[in-house]
Length: 84
Image 1 (tube, rainbow, N blue to C red):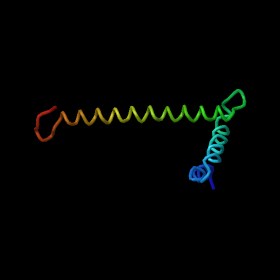
Image 2: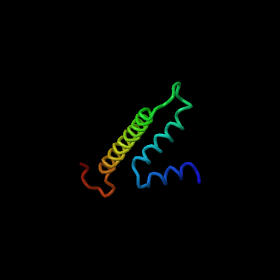
Image 3: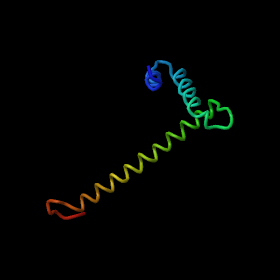
Image 4: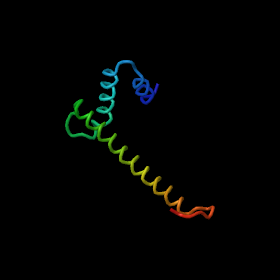
């Protein structure tokens, strides 16, 4: 089973404490080679929060783009109606 599959199966586990420990361990394993000092569980938690926050920003920007595109499309009414 690949690393991704093992991680995915742990996410669906019944013990949230073990799932969190496994996520921290996997995060430390991934990022340790890029760090100058040993990473702790607290470092792993912070990395996870930062990555999650980054993707939340990207999702928000994408939603703003989609909303802007929808407003632009409404102004260019192909049926000849009044533009807002």
